[in-house]
Image (cartoon, helix red, strand yellow):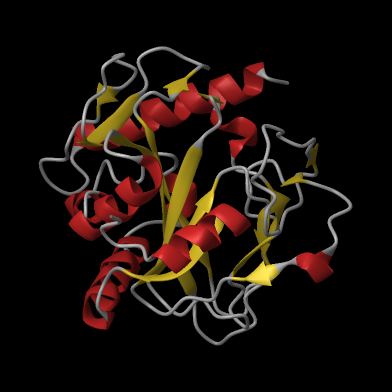
Length: 271
């Protein structure tokens, strides 16, 4: 029997490759996370989504707590089974009236996971409405083993690192996934998805958390890190993430930077 998701939501997942909306945090909890995020960005030059990549939870105990949230783990177990790892996390933010967008793509393209069977929970800290440029998907595009060809555009307004884009997508088949603060969506990393610019008067702030069954391995480099959320890792595919002792500790900053360099170098090797 599922722990969080209903039978209808499980059917939606099988049919579309995504499920939404799922209540995770209260409005007050979401507001607190957003306040922490705003404090982080006000303390630094640039954006958190540029500075903290792939392992954004490593320097922040409050994000570690979100990644390991009990209800989130229950939802992941409903979809992946009892042996869970969280191998990454990232901010995805657009400022108010922000022209930046995310092109049609599959997350699996550069993750380097074998098999490419990972899923992402996208947690809304603020309203992610249609006006604010919420995520949208091509339902059913997760089915089959194919990772489709992507053109690397390097568009300055594309929030993806290479502007990777799947061409010739019929937008009339797309379905939007709006979320209220504290809600989350979950999508398969082969599900084709995108988001439009933020035309709202408020920032669209979300946090993406990546999960897999522990049997999935990182094929691009050795000794990949993850949080062992539940169950076992019988093949020893993942080394345990270092839990932050306090916010922005030198050790945690070094860990997130070192891992991003490993991941970035692995992506360069693919070209």
